[in-house]
Image (cartoon, rainbow, N blue to C red; front, top):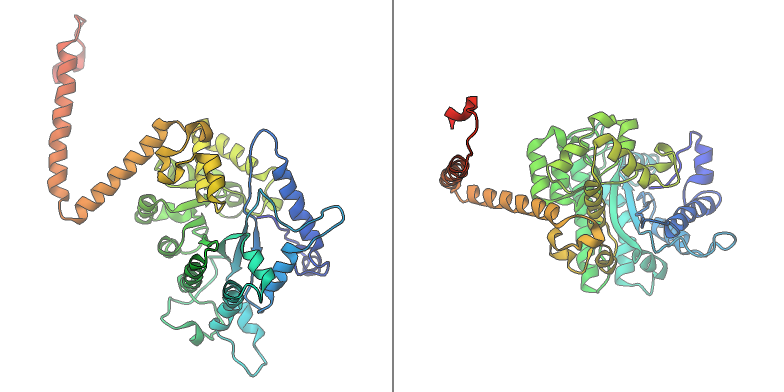
Length: 418
C-alpha cells in the first residue's frame, strides 16, 4: 500500500488522501508514478494491489472516491488512476470510537449500524441501479477486495451478541464481532453481484500482526486470505487449520521488523517450510523501504535472511498470484491454462516451480486431509496400526536388500545391530 504518513495533521490534510485540500492531486500523481514504474518494469513482471480507504464516516465517501479514481488528471499525469498492473483494494479502518464521538452533542445517537450503512449502502445501490450511480458502479469494476485495518493491540470489548443497531457504546466492539458484520455484508453483496454477472470481492483483513492471537480464529472462519498473520506461531492448532485450508498469508517482514517482530524472529521461514500458503508483500513502502521497487526489496531481504533458494522464491511468487484478485485470464497467462485445477497443474515453465516441488506440497496436503477425515470417522487408531505394520515391512525389505547385496568389507560397529 502506498501512502504517506506525516507528523503534522495539516500536512496530512494537504497531501495524504483523495479528499484533501489539493483535491487529491498529489496522491493521484504519486499513485500514477508507482503504477507507471510497474508498467515499465524490465526483466520481471510486477503488479500491485494498492489500497484506498473508506471510513464509513459519511454516505458520500464512495462517490468522492469514484470521482478521484476516474477523473482525468490531465497535465503530466493524464487519465484516471487506473492501471493494467494495479487492482484496487478498499481498506476499512475500524474507527467506531471516532465515529461515535462525532455524534456527541447531537440529538441522534449513532449506532454501529449507521456506520455499516455508510460503508455498504452506496455500493449496494450502485450494484442494483448502476444507471443512477454510474461513477460508483464503474469504480466497483476496478476493486478486487476489502481489507480491515487498525491497531489490533488496542483495548476492545468482549465479543457481544448485540446487533449493530444496538451498539451505541463509545468503545470499540470486539475485533471478531466487527469482522463478522463486514464479512456478512460483503457476502450478501457478492451474491447479488454474481447474480448480475458482475465482479465480486474477496475479504482479506489485517490479522495476527499484534494483539490477541485468537483474532486469527475469526479470520480463519471469515477471510479468503489475510495480511500478516505472524502471531500464528503462537497458535499451533490454528496454524494447522490455516495449512489444511490453505488460507493465504501475505507477510511483510520489513514492516514487521520495524514494528512488531525482528527479522530473525519472524515466523515466515517456518510457515513456508511447513507448507502454509504464504507470500511476501509490502506494507507502507514509503516508510519501510529504501528503493523504488519495494516488493523486490522484500524478496531480496527474505532470500538473504531466510536462506531461500530460487525455487523457494518462485513458489512464494506463485502463491502471490494465486492469492491476488487479478482476473482469471491474467492468472492463466502467469501460471498456466489449468492453474485452477491445483498447484501440480501450474505450468512450471511459467512459474519456475519444479513439478517435484508442487507434487511434494500437494501430496503431503492430501495425506493430511485423508488422515483428518479418517480420524474424524473414528478409524484413526485402526489405520495408524495398519500403517505401522506397512512401514515396518518396508523397513525390513530395505534392510534385507542392503544386507543381501553387501560386499566384503571390514566389519563396522553397528553391523551386529541390524
